[in-house]
Length: 197
Image 1: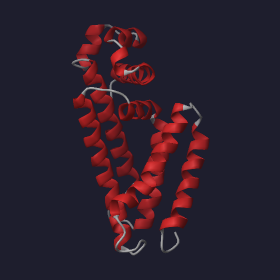
Image 2 (image 1 turned 30 degrees about the vertical axis):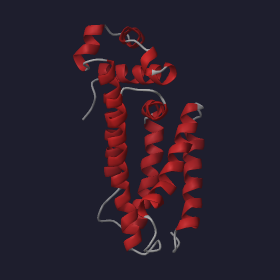
Image 3 (image 1 turned 90 degrees about the vertical axis):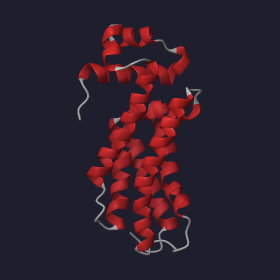
């Protein structure tokens, strides 16, 4: 579902301000001024500043889920879905830098407990989706049968996350990031797969 233009503008501005200054150091007034909206407009879309941040976390999950649905087919082979997973991360990094900035901030900054729990729940949901790809890879004998599934998933997704966060925080353009994701992806395959892809 498409987000109304004004709401999206508020979300992007809030993500930039909160990730730069911290949740507790940014006021609703400051978000409104930077977005060029009045407080009643912001409150039409959100209950409060915490609700804005919760919406950003949910939006990050929704966009990843939509990309996942676009590039991952549960009926396809492990090989096809593994390559699709690379495209998910590349396209997310390319299209949603503001969501990545806020995601990094949520991981490291002091925030309301409710926000931390929401972020944790969304991360677990995403990892659960990705885990199904790797479970199929084990079933199709791309990995040793006794490999620890959770660690296998993190061996690919955690470095992807680090590369994306580093690139976004250093404000690099997307081309080197996509190349670096692909380089790590190719390296990972040589280290973990029993049969070549």
